[in-house]
Amino acid sequence: MADVLADIWDKVLRHFQKHNSQHWRNWFEQIEPITLENGLLRVGVPELSWQQYLKQSCNSSLQEAAQR
Image (cartoon, rainbow, N blue to C red; front, side):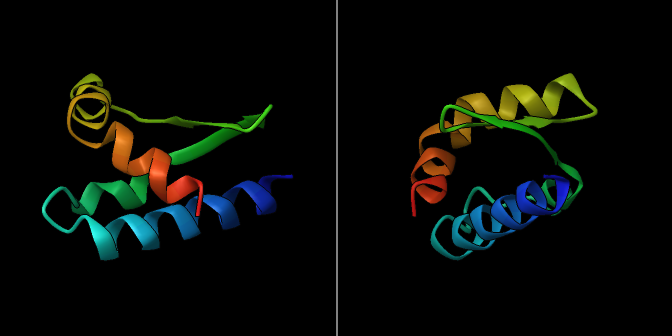
């Protein structure tokens, strides 16, 4: 399952980076996929500030990327 999650997250990141370069940060590569349940992909970040940035600036764009 970990390989599937990593593959899904990699595709999300590639799509996000291509279509939302203004929000892309190099540390996105350090975000880890945690679970995929009922169509919801949960990721883990090591810093609270990263979580806040993702929620405030990237949430809808990441959701769009994940649906592709």
